[in-house]
Length: 308
Image (tube, rainbow, N blue to C red):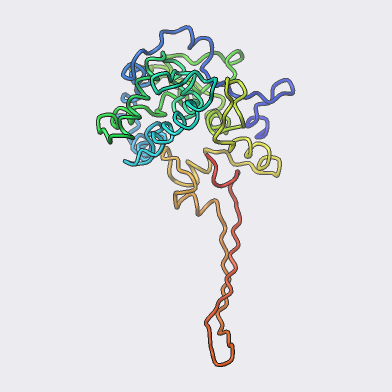
């Protein structure tokens, strides 16, 4: 049962999560500015009741998915590199200068780092690029704040991406928050609680954390293949843990989902054994201290390390 729920086998085929929220989202009014897009996915009303989860989330990279770790802004810098060394150098991309970048160009990164960008007009992509260059080139603090307002917040996982098979299970309802049960929800913006069939399953995370190249894009790319490795190596070998079980429950980090850099994850993911023998090497009258050191590292994680 775990295998079926994790892979979501349908009619003999593995269904790959779609990169957009579906036809319904495409028909709705799209954001024209970053401020409008942020407002569409505003999670501030969640804080009062879910304070601990919010505080955990704030420490995670999900909270800075466009900007990147802490004050360094490494992710923003990588976006610029993608434009300069990718889009501008690809002769058929249509990008000759940063101002030419549209939503479809940014989606090669934003598919994971900001999937809701699919629900915005090109003007938002251009605004994001303008702020990226302002921060990376000039250290503009205001631009950094703008970039940090864009993230994978509560409603991305608990609404937008909470349903994969939309023809079967329906499209996410805008006034609902998706979790593990049905019922009322004490929030004016989301007064309804709906059960998501995938909230505890790895495929929820797999929508961003990778099966392989995105062949539905005009220029297929993929940074992470973590979910594919989990699906095709870990599960067939008898593994049963989901992403959420390791990265949220067993680690004790909750919504502060971390990767192999965090000590809590290293303890769970790796077995390290070290054997060392010290001795003196004698060459005539010369004594040289030497050592034989054998380090054995075993990966216990459900996927390769590192992976994105």
